Length: 366
Ligand SMILES: Nc1ncnc2c1ncn2[C@@H]1O[C@H](COP(=O)(O)OP(=O)(O)OP(=O)(O)O)[C@@H](O)[C@H]1O
Ligand SMILES: [Mg+2]
Image (cartoon, rainbow, N blue to C red):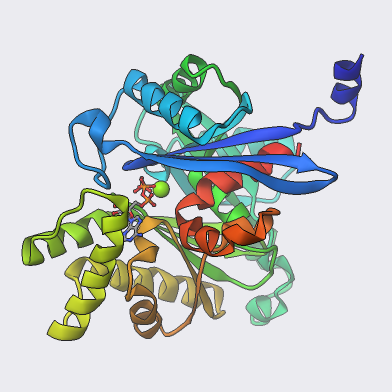
């Protein structure tokens, strides 16, 4: 009876596990709804390197059975007991793009999007799972249309965000969830999880920079939805590797990473140079942001940094100077109720858990 009622009331989960399988580590976050408040139950991270013969902190390619083993170990360690879960899919395993489409009814739009999307997708359309949504926004921007004729065709076009994921990728993640005895409620591209946990619904355009181990992901978000996503083929692993060769640092333990962080700021201060890889990330970011600003005729005044690479010491002031925008370090745990004594720990760990928290937030909201 209770289960039945729960179903008609929207089948909300009392507790939910967000699972982010990154290239260097798996992160889990379990949230529960307690008296109407989203509460942090537990969270944890496990490095994947050792499951594939590599060091902690390094990215590694693993098969579903190895990923399952790591996930099981992590759930045990973090004492996560929720069985209902959401998993993220790496942006690099998917295709996300925008298309301009005529304003027609939804059914017709669906057909047109599927047809048009073939031009963007390099594999047979039958091999991918496709989803799309209309990007709200500019239609009320009088400025933009000020110099257009009333009947100008542009007026009747809308922007559509299309997401395509290879079916093999979907089955790989389903397999991991199944073998870890999790009831998979949804799979979501990491982009959407991140923006849910790191930004408040806001009309202003912001750029989110997720510096992961293997790659950096850049998202431009406006009106609370993603307007553009972009992958930069450099991650914090490259920066640390560059430092390793220079300074022969060990990368073995997480707490050693803090030392690497200090080493980064040391190296930056002493040699007056910066890791080339960070410059590459920032130059590409500047370009994408400038293009966006030009195309949409508006400014982006805030950059939010997330991902393990964003906690490298010395990185924030450097990024601020380079991008000439206000910078914020993501604090995704702020969207949950947490014990006060964990405040500092959660602030420090936060940027690594943005994806997992975003997944869990979606799971709890229905
Ligand atoms: N406290 C820290 N100080 C310095 N570096 C850190 C710290 N914590 C994590 N890192 C670095 O951040 C990286 C991991 O970041 P993250 O967990 O965001 O990557 P990922 O999600 O596994 O990778 P990707 O998103 O590219 O798939 C590691 O390479 C690690 O060296
Ligand atoms: Mg990541």
